[in-house]
Amino acid sequence: MENNTRNIPIEKFKFAHRNDLLHDSKFETKPVSYFQGAFKRFSKNKGAVVGGVVIAVLVLFAILAPFFTPFRPAYYDMVYAYVYPKLDVFAENDIPFWDGCKTKSTNKIGYLKDVALAAETGREVIKNNEVEISEDGSVYTYRYDTYYGVGFGKYKTISLQEFQDIQEYQLRTGRQVLYPVVKFSERPTMEKNKYDANIYYEVKNKKKSTLEPKLDDEGNIIPNYWRYEDGKASSTIPEYNSLRIEGEDGIQEDGKTYYYAYGRKVDGGVEVRAEYYEYYTYQHTEVKKDGIAEPSFIFGTTQTGKDIFACLAYGARFSFVFATIVALANFIVGVIWGSISGYCGGKIDLCMERFAEILGSVPSMIVITLLKYHMGATSQTLVLFIAFFATGWIGMAGRTRMQFYRFKNQEYVLAARTLGARDSRIMFKHILPNGLGTIVTSVALVIPSMIYSETSLSYLGIINLEAGDTTSVGTLIAAGQQSIMADAAYVALFPCLFLILLMLSFNLFGNGLRDAFNPSLRGTED
Image (cartoon, rainbow, N blue to C red; front, top):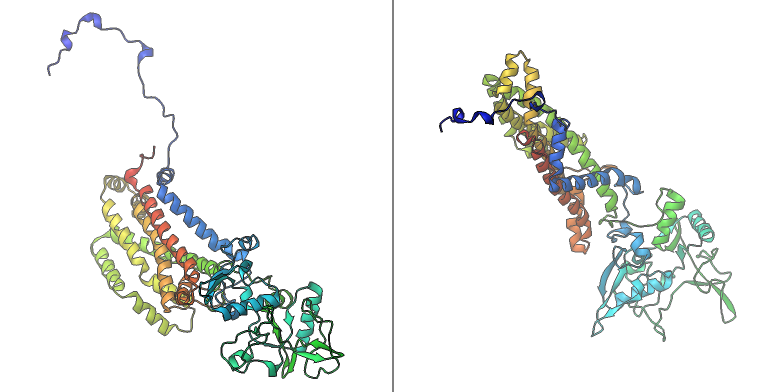
């Protein structure tokens, strides 16, 4: 296009005044630093924010949960194996969820046994006494309290002093622990039933393996308590006052007075029938005084009676701490190694790369096996740390090396070198911050990777972390695999849910960090 400025009429031109001159205006916004911009970009990623919140919740659970439970991973109680999760708020408000109950289907004999236990102890073994009976009358279905349903277990032998201490405890608190015993000669014949303390009633046939309770004309259980005549208690323990068993003040028959026997003298002490729920409370509040008031397990128990909530909390704490330490160690060594290799290049890079490749080609399983063989007497945690650290830094070194090769010939690096900047300044002031996005993302993903590897090894039994107050999420998942056949899938539910949330949230969080620290996106946060 031709220049027509010469054809512009002169009347179109005007003199410019000083006030009409335009100058560059001062920026009204404050400068945004690299990390401030990264935080703004991260905040716009909703998935990453949700992932960060979930991670924060899991970390808080691992830190705080152990302080809110009196149980420890070393705790176990075989009597309370496979009891269902229980929250007191649901149990107290009669909400049929998370109340320690399970749906039980059994025959008439099994139902009568639960009825007999509820009748003697006054416990609500059958929730709300609501029962569904099949049309043919062969199947009884109801919600069964796994805590009260334990009942008495086996006959227990205690010392005479403990017997007297329990009696004093009962009179002081109003909570009954001991109940009348059954005379040895009146017990069922078979060995497995002879010492079953839940069988306090008369049965139709004492020689059978499955014992059917005998009922009176009104359909009630008939107790078979050992009664002794007043003044003739040679092998029984009569010095006892019951709290709720009728006839404690004496039973008059044929002009004679009879009392119930609450213990049988045996070698080593007194054989008694102790309701385990109350005996458990007595042991922990009066004897051990360990802060446990009553049996109540938020996440239920395993096949060995371990509290899942405590094991998961301590296992999560161990996993987070262990993975963070390993990731930090790998980050420091990997960044230093990769920086030197990528910046120097040439023969130095060649030698360092070949060494890393040789070390990385050794399978981690072989490393762990050799370490266990030569360090069997040392801590399993130390073996695991050395195994993960031995080759864990190689991936970090490779990513750092790649970033240094990417940025070391950029114009701003050449300008810094021209101005006389030292190599260390160029490496860690100019090159490393530009590759920080990829490196930080890899660190964020290393932590769940370490947790997953540690969980897998403990799940397979290759590493055993069950020592004192140390445990692993993988050990709980392994226990949960065995519990599925025992109709206790909740044992695996909670640790698996923890692991799933951990892996998903860390992946979302890592992706958000990658985008936030990407230098090519700087200035796009508005």
